Image 1 (cartoon, chains in turn purple, green):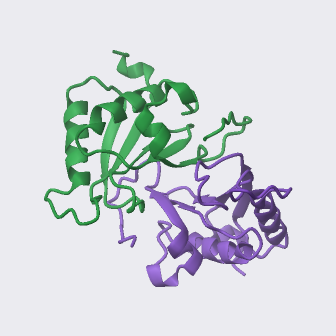
Image 2 (cartoon, rainbow over the protein chains, first blue to last red; image 1 turned 90 degrees about the vertical axis):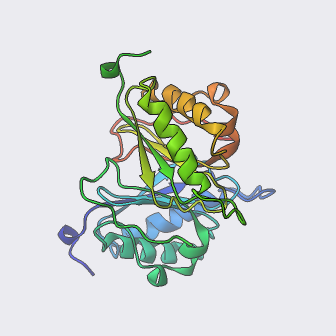
Length: 138
Length: 138
C-alpha cells in the first residue's frame, strides 16, 4: 500500500442514477456500484481516492458510468461498467492513474474495462504551462 | 457583446484528430473545425473563450468532438459536430455556458447540437463546497 501522503488526491465520480434500459430494480445499478466502491475504499486499501456520488454524468446510454479527475491530470470518463463485478477493477485502474504524473496510464496497463469502456478524456484544467503528453486512444 | 472582464474564462478544447470513418480528406474534419472556431473567436465576438487544440478526446466514434471547461463549472463533452456548419452554433452554446454560474444551461436554451451530441458531463473540479445544482440530462 502506498503511503497516503505520496498520492496526489483523486476524485472518482460515480453516477448514482445509472440504470440499464428496462431495469426497474432498486436501488439502481449506479447506486449499487456507488455502494460497492464506497465499501471498498472504506477498507483503506486505496489511499488518496475519494468516491463521490453524482446525479448524472450524461452517459445514460452506457450504464454504469464513472469519471476520474485529479489536479494536473487528464480527466477520464468510463461507461459500460458492471455494478458489482467492476468495483475492484475500477479502483485498481484508478490506483494506476493515481501513480502517474498526468493521468495517462500506458494503454497495455489499463484494465480491459477501461480500454473498452472509455467514453471521453479531457485535458488537465486549468491548462498546464508545459507541453502535454498525449497518446493514441484507440 | 459582454465586457471581457465580466466573463469567467472558458476553455473550448477541440479534437484536431477527429475524422469520420473512411474520410481520408486532409486537413482532417477536426482540424477544419478547429480552424473555423479559431477564426470565429479571433474576430472578437466571444470574449473570455479560448480555443485550444487537443490531439484526442477519446470520442473517436462520434466526430467531431469538443469539450468545454471553466473553473467552478461543470465540464461538458459534445460529439457528432459538423466541421463547418457547427462552429457558430458551438460558440453560441459556449457563450450561454459562460453566462451561467455553474455551467448548466437550461435544457430548452441549449443548441439542438448540444442536446443531441452530449457525450458526458463532469462536475466542477476541484469539488465545490456548496451543494451542486443538478438537472436531468435526457
